[in-house]
Image 1 (cartoon, one colour):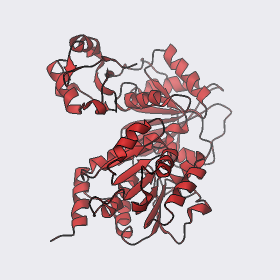
Image 2 (tube, one colour; image 1 turned 60 degrees about the vertical axis):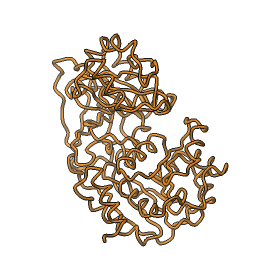
Image 3 (cartoon, one colour; image 1 turned 90 degrees about the vertical axis):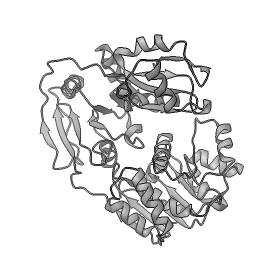
Length: 441
């Protein structure tokens, strides 16, 4: 009979749609069986999440043994991404997430039956440890994912307190996209096994191009670039919220579909912005570096540095949003006439030009339909697909991404049909319940 753990891993890999693990994941799987402390440095989009989730399967061999693995992350978005990856493994093991902005009561109810894997932000994880809704004594595996970002965000106190609750885990794993990240003394790293897959070589599928404006103002250059790209998901990075809003105003004046994403927005607003970006309703997202980590979107085709990154680390993380998992992508660095090329720009960057745009930016194919019900109302993707086909008159291949949140849901549908669909669905029910259906703002 084969090793049960090996069989679980094989099933998880198959469910993820992989033919095999990549070298980094294979090495992590091998050393995780014996190493007590591991530092994993690997670029975003390299499959790092799968790599550190594989050891969770080993810790979960004993049924009904409480929470065995804890993943601490710097952002809500990253917590939800990891949860989705784990669910895609199809193990049937319970996973829960905890983060600021999520109802504490909902989390408490989810934790009554302890999940095998718990994922959360530092402050909310510490809250549950202090309240006893999470039992630290059962946790064998502690993972600090993107640990440098957590410390950059000022979570030293919370992480130190979490480590005080779990002072001697059987295994401690720290991950980052770059090796330049330092580990504070209070983490008590001693002789760790280091997996360094960070590299200064040109990532496969990635092109970096530099564009220079004729004058100080880069807005005209940005507009020409967006018109030239004219398709695909595009992230436009700025260093400050004010620049994000200024660019957004310009795009709005020109009738260009887009959204903004920064720390000045409330969480629900940020969540909707990401949903509409992922599903292509708003294929341009103007953002601060808040979006440089934690967004696992495979099909981002363009990264635009409207304002140069403040450091090489930030530059790497921004670029890591594209050319993920063997996909292709282009990074565009925009400089004004008097800006110098940052020292961190690699030698393989190509100086280029953008031809004057001769056509307007195309309207997105999709718009987003809002449903005023979600997981807590027992709504499933199947319910929404059935309604859109049977009552909304859509064909199956016309339906885009569907997102089900706790109390609301979203579906990408053809923009030209959304008004008619709202009329058709205005009196329909889902699960025998009248649900608000509208175009998402």
